[in-house]
Image (cartoon, rainbow, N blue to C red; front, side, top):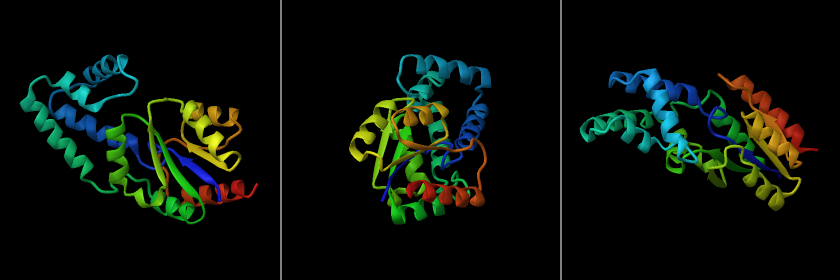
Length: 197
């Protein structure tokens, strides 16, 4: 049995689509792309991770409007499994039969957990770690110490993959963009070959 660390955003869920839908909501309430990016920069400057509540407080100082925007956001989170890539659920289900799966995701804890719960992957993972370390180096080092060579990392970030490999962790870079059932089936076969080494 291997321990497989799996990223969430852009790895199992279509975060780009989620962001587009969030931006569409903000546009309906009069926020331009330029205003969005400026607010995002100003908010994240003083924080380790992007905090969605702080962002909304910054962009919508009027509590009545903020409540309306939050109501629209709730609808996005109400789309159960709505942002999962096709084949992602079957992929983690297959891996979980033979391996210990741990979610290792970067971001704001509450926000990431809501996306994870929405995706419906919970029962396939033994543990969930939401980290504020962008490149996950400290977390990878801790997992490497605990599980030794029986560790595999799946992530879309080249920086995370490089950090994993520098620690002697087997790592597979997940492609950016749309993925489908065939992609995940091929990925599962690749991981099984890797786990046998």
